[in-house]
Image 1 (tube, rainbow, N blue to C red):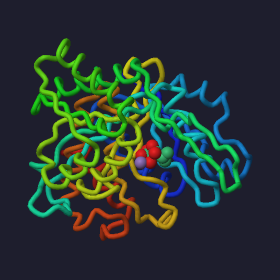
Image 2: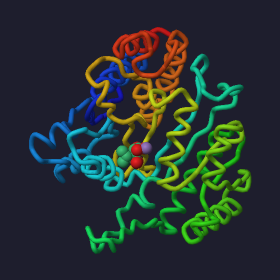
Image 3: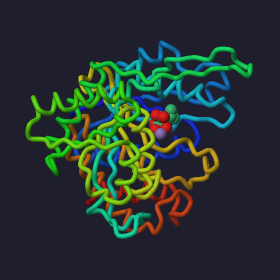
Image 4: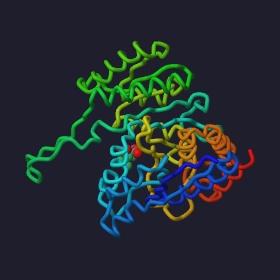
Length: 356
Ligand code: IPM
Ligand code: MN
């Protein structure tokens, strides 16, 4: 029997509750599909930091490298200064493990309320490939004359040809494999960010013309992208973009697919030189933490992405069918409004995954 080694990082806030449900579903589907998951827990997050002062020891990163995948709940704690845990854990894992693709599907399921009038599952089904290693996220910049009226703060948008190219190639290949509309859209800001997105745009057309002639190429400024995501989401098949724009547009995308409780993601190292990490797009939501109110479907759908990445495509498809069934009976997928508890939703999906 095939066994996958999974590192489980439940994290902060609602992280542990939604991961618990994801693991329930993984257990059900692995029994059915005859593979096993060897789980190891890692205590990382705000609680550990407040208790011990440790964010993410180097030794833990080394340990994590031995796993096939990482399953993460959420990172962020109201008593910890913003940035400490985000940069110290989440971004550090993305950088150190070279998880340079952040794959974020925007898919609206049947019967999930969509805030856009006249749009449904037929129109909202695309994926965002968010570059995950560069941009303003690299931390390049600084503050001088801090605290004086002349204080200057700089945070630089950094991209190398190498970073741009590997991301674009992956996005083209995904568009090809998806074989839906065979259209890749680059989302940038070539009219203002005339250095960084000049690089992106040139690489986009060069790589596309030479190595992916069957894939149509479109370009949108990021502001126009936001407009089309609302007005004409059916335009999109695959969107590729930089780290910062990708962060922003995927929250907008999440709203169109029913909210943060529905948005899944994978931080992927395509060469598999380190484990990839799967996590819901949502944060730790401390206001509802521990109340069994959070929607676990984003975490469950992230587990589905993890199985697909591991090569368990059939198991991933079962989880998606199970979610599609259960979501039909949920009137409102917003956390706290589901009319069911976190654990009840997880039970139902696990049941469906075992029997559907
Ligand atoms: C996300 C989050 C993170 C990001 C934060 C928590 C650092 O918003 O995964 O989208 O900006 O990437
Ligand atoms: Mn975000």
